[in-house]
Length: 242
Image 1 (cartoon, rainbow, N blue to C red):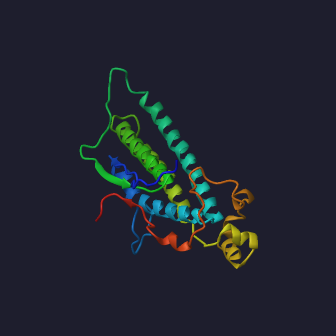
Image 2 (cartoon, rainbow, N blue to C red):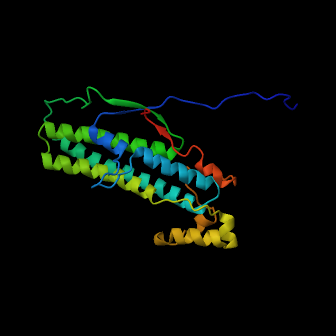
Image 3 (cartoon, rainbow, N blue to C red):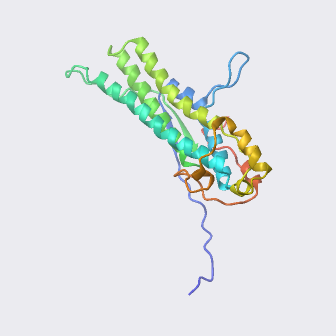
């Protein structure tokens, strides 16, 4: 028998918080604003904003949004491996500690904790990478403190981990929403031509992505609505308000 009424059930919500123990990780989180003598550096909030735009573009059947989401997913996986490689080297260094000495976790006496409201899985993937980097920095600082690595090596390893995240964020910055959908490419119209021109420096879009047969594991369902939805609620809220 068909239901004669509908249940008015609201959206699901969960409290999520991030704890960071190092200034190095906090700087990656915040990024750097543009100044007279320095260019801006995108932080995690800016990265998530770009991912949101890709998500909304992919919802509107934009193949370039799908292409960039796929590249971000692959870059996240590569970044995970790069950070694990640093961690493995740290394991080898810490194994040199005499067995008679036991060292606990290197934690801040006053870590920073902030709530996270992130609307897409790839944004969370980036947060996981940031927490991995935070742990790497703590381990490297501890290794230097107990004399297992020198200061120069400490700085090199910390910078190496930071570059992994910066490269991921920089890839997201290359994205731009063109407003062209797969129907435009099928019609080979002016919108499609403009989109190809905008991404010309990155080569031709792979055919399977153009046809929609290959998408990111985290790509949203396609819903060919008005492009105006792209500009609604564009940014994730991450952390505390000013």
